[in-house]
Image (tube, rainbow, N blue to C red; front, side, top):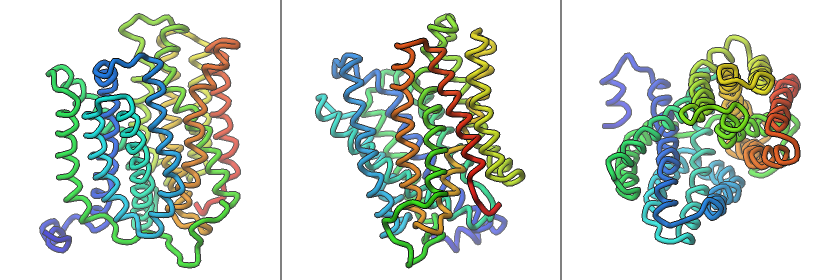
Length: 390
């Protein structure tokens, strides 16, 4: 069934809606693959007999592959188009997920994780480039809703993982089921994604120094992803050691953060359309700082949960809106511009967790969270320097 037939069967569904649904499916599939891996890390650790220290070293292979692929992903997306790269990379991502379940040694697992990170970022740049094109069809922000689908897939992947573990299904069987679903969905969605990228210009170089606007966007992403990384890796520890929460409530902060981050991404596009990119980013930074300072100033269960709720709302819109703005660059092609901003932003994701550990060791965990709150203020301040056509 080709696109024309599908459109005739659904005359009330516009072309751009079909495109949006197809690109959204790619975001969901990538998020589902990553969440499926994350849900089985304890199982794989037990199978391979890895200590926590050994596991920490093994997990570094994933960001290593991601970082190496950043310049390659932008170049390849620009060279052959995001449609081909997205289709191939999302399929390979699910296939590499299956290989993680078959790993029988530490070296095999590290090699597979390296490829998982490399292919995953190729998919990330390509599908975000597709999302930039869909935004061009709508003439308004829709990027955050795509990232909301990624977050929604994270919840789905976690639930499926919990079911698989409870049913005694081993990782490779679990991952095989995800692969089958991903390939089937990809076969349909890939036929309806954008055939050509938006904002393409033959005069734009594949590699060039990012302009001031892209650098500012990269710094905003850097600050936001420091905060995001802190929530992922330290929220549970904060609730355990500072809030002194009961065992059943240790994960309450992380749950609060994830729920509002997902929800915020589905309303961020509307908010940005109404109030503009700059104001949305400024409010996001203020919410991040306010939430963290609330959790630090009032270290009690209820107030800390409230604070993490605010952080989730604040973080939710920053990266999608920054990617959206970067994809409209007139200096670099969308793929290369996204790769440039992603590189700067991802450094924050890597630096954030160890920075908290270092500061906490020298002072206290509460002091380290105050410093992370400062990153939220930086988002708000740097947003004032962004120049965009609202």
